[in-house]
Amino acid sequence: MTHQVHAFEPPERFVAGTVGPPGERTFFLQARGGGRLVSVALEKVQVSLLAEKLEELLTEAQRRFGVQLPEAVASVGDNDPLDTPVDEEFRVGTLGLAFDVDTATVVIEAIAAGEAEAEVELGGGEDDDDDEDDEEPDEDLDRLRVRLTPEATREFIERARRVVNAGRPPCPLCGQPLDPAGHLCPRHNGYHR
Image 1: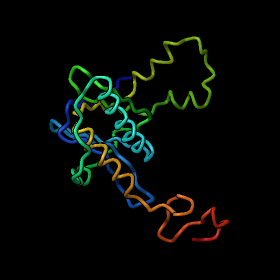
Image 2 (image 1 turned 90 degrees about the vertical axis):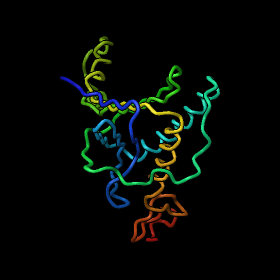
Image 3 (image 1 turned 45 degrees about the horizontal axis):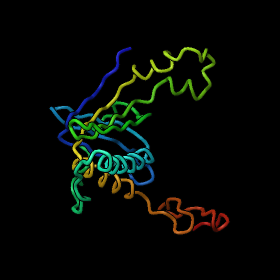
Image 4 (image 1 turned 120 degrees about the horizontal axis):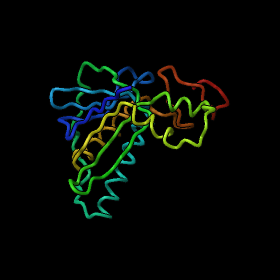
């Protein structure tokens, strides 16, 4: 089975965004460049963790390699909606991060969720002695690879955080998202709030 590697090194634009109303949003990573547009779907928690881990990666690159990092972005930056059409290429199962010291760039790789993950979750029942077979399915999965400068990475982090926080406000008591009609708060023993 052939797989596609959508490489943007560097992209003209790389952002996290959503489609749909709060509470029903679908999260996407979208890369544009060279006349191509690639959108991959992922979970809200993946976007949040990606922003967090990218911040840690930049800090570690500065500490270990002396990379000059830009200051935290104070301006709003790219707040435009996702480019259309938003056609999902694949759903992200795994995210990978690396820092390329030679080019002082951050490499982000989003790998499609595959059948191999489902087999592992279901307890595939095959011999576990074949280590080569365990790593081979990963090679057959589509992936989005993006290479960003530290400045572009900071801008991505700030936008990703804004997108994650733009959803439904949290309940002040339990932290779960509030629907427009309220919600059943466990801290109020199930009374509607």
